[in-house]
Length: 194
Image (cartoon, rainbow, N blue to C red):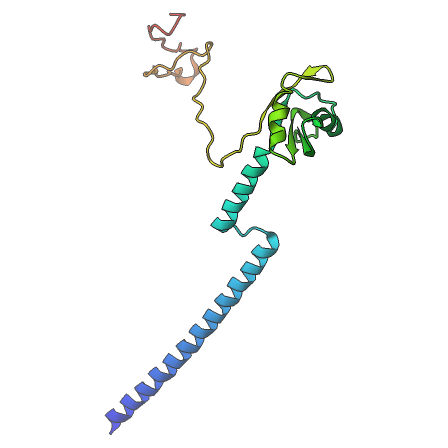
C-alpha cells in the first residue's frame, strides 16, 4: 500500500508540474504576441516597414521620377533654384529643382530638375552647353542609382611612391645607445640611393 501511495503522490506532483509548465508556457506565448504587436505598431509609426513588395514599388516609383528628371552640372554657386527653373521653363512644366549642398549648406555646383512630363527631358537635353550666369551648363538625363552597385575602382598608382619590396631587410638597433647602426640597404633596382 505504501508503494501505491508513493506512485499516486508522484503522479499528482507530475500532473501539477505539468499544469504549471503549461500555464507558464501560455504566459510566455501571450507576452511574445504582445511584444510582436507592439513592435509592428512602432515600425508602422516609424515607417520603417520594408516588405519586398513595398521596396519594389518604391524602386519603380523612383525609376519613373528619374525618367522625368535631368542632371545639370556646372551651375553657378550663387544661382537660386528659381533661376534654374526659369532657364528650363521652355522645355516643359518644372515640378522641382534641387540644388545639392554640402554639410555646411554651400552649393556643390550641380542641380537636378524634375519635370511633370517625360517628353520634357528630351527638350531639356537640347539645352546642353547653354549658358546660365556666364557658365556653360552640362545637361544629361538623370540616372537611377542601384543600391549596392558601386563600380569597382582599382587603387591608383602614385608615380612618386616607390614599389614595395617583397623582402624588407631587418632594422638593427644600436645596443645600449652606443651610436647609430645604419639601416641595411639592399642593392635592388628600386633603390636609387644604393
